[in-house]
View 1 (cartoon, protein in one colour):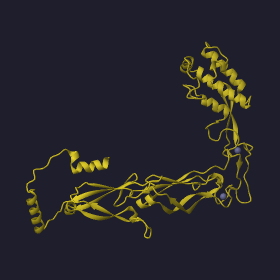
View 2: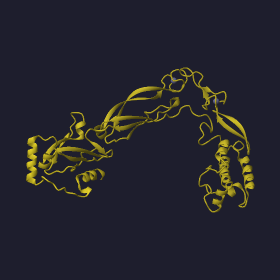
View 3: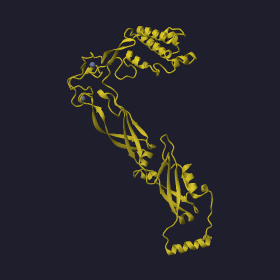
View 4: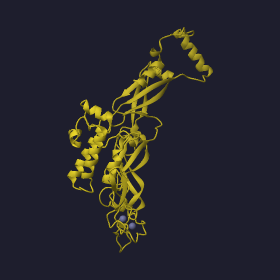
Length: 385
Ligand SMILES: [Zn+2]
Ligand SMILES: [Zn+2]
């Protein structure tokens, strides 16, 4: 749409506000949809109105005169001080957005709404997938009337108030003269038909609430907030219209050992000071240990703790994390926490004092370093990088 608004209204570039208004009124009367209902006239009427919207607004007119796009905001934009969408609605009966307006009755049958249910799954179920039985409570098509809403043996009949049109005319006065507006018929709520004998099962709605059991397959790799879509398992629409979709939103329960970061798993294993000093091997469970018995999976692994392992030491085990929704698999990061012994008995204390004496550690001087080179700095780095 690149037409010149001056040409559209048939006025000169120097036309003043009154001349522009006069030209628009004249054209609007000619192109009024009740006078000229053909689509071409209606289209021209829209163009002329858009042109008037530009030229009647000093700012927009100046912007156009400077070479701007006159209809940059599209038809019926936010006209300053003068609502043209109101006029458009008055002429076109609220087409394009107004509910129930426009041409003809609105259908009784409409698509139903989507439904959402939330379920909680265990971390292993989210990681490896699971099938769940769900109890779903949604509207379903009424079997008594088949969705039509009329009692068996009867049917909807045309509305006498609007003669089946679904809308009735209202006349109002405006600066353009009398304007006829079509509004939804109150007697039939715009349907054009009434149900003289509504179905008793659904009270004429064509649908009833029902509880049913569904099996949903939750794919491997889902995370907190993932929504699994089940097509056409949502609410059946009014008049027995097609069902919306059902979304199952996943919430993953916290795990007592593993913490999930994306597709990686983190856990901490405590090792006695002596074992960390001497070195050892510890058998740890994998996330697969949570899966039902009988599945052939790796349920544990041996963590090597080399002699001299420091607290905060991290071991990365490739491929023992969570499978990705689109393939691949994350890692398992195990952090070693070295435990200092407490509640020493006399014999243990004696041995430790002897060890300290041999190592010359009876009176440590304290090895002061920047924070990032300490165990706690490394721990922090491990979790933030
Ligand atoms: Zn029914
Ligand atoms: Zn009616």
